[in-house]
Image (cartoon, rainbow, N blue to C red; front, side, top):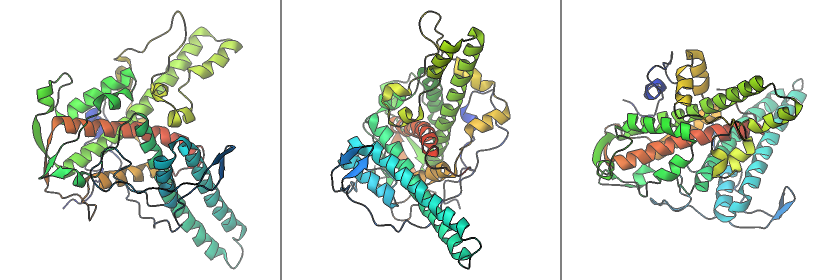
Length: 398
């Protein structure tokens, strides 16, 4: 019997792409994270910590809600490491310094891991070589658990910028096997994407839940039934699709910028302007406002080129199998682990964390749409966060 969200069972990513696009292999499976829990004690207060010259006063972290609450920090996946619990408290109590705290935690994790590895190499010829090697391995596992929690809190922070709370554990939100998610937040979740990406997102939503883009209110609130396990697989596949769209759209923007530079034979002055044509800086993507997430204009003034609705779709349809796999593949093991853990936390049983294979959920198409839109946004944010974190803490290649 099937007891996990194995991505070998997730619908192939190619089924959500334009019909001429094919993938030579199925989606890569995820290996569940089996590193031990972080044993460091939870830091529940800043004590005049200096973040880039700013003094942060002490405060206490508050506990999250334990029921189906969409208004508070009630993410399905609870942080298991000290850095994750610490940032959860910061986000609830002093949101304005969250990004400073996150950067500080990433730097601390990178330093801890590098220090352990350095001691291992220094003592490689000593009698304690085996001991230091084991310490380095344990520190690697501890830091990996910590950085995954930091990535998750950064993703949660991005959702909160759009005033969209993550759906809590479904087991807390179901009554008599009936699931309803309200408010839907469809407009906020769609505003995350640029216009050309949004068209493909809407096509994806229509394909996976069978709801037309221009469906009526009555159609949206019509009820349907779906197995919880199948819904979890659709959610995981939609995360991968959002990740793929962000990767493909950035590749497209970069290629268009390079083509524009070649055509205009930019001089030195325009070469400086070329830097402004590239996609937004990594830090602004992680901590910027909604406008930073929109597509980047390819030039100013007369002759400015606008990307048509079909341009990105045609670009993706032109991918060869190797390029398609490169854009669709998760770059780090930490990202793969995070998707696996988040999906289990969201769809798993409250006690065991394992979804019931034969459970059928009755819900509305509106709630299904909400889950799919959230998953696509999660994948898009994950791409940005992964890129940012890797500049501070070197992630493992997937």
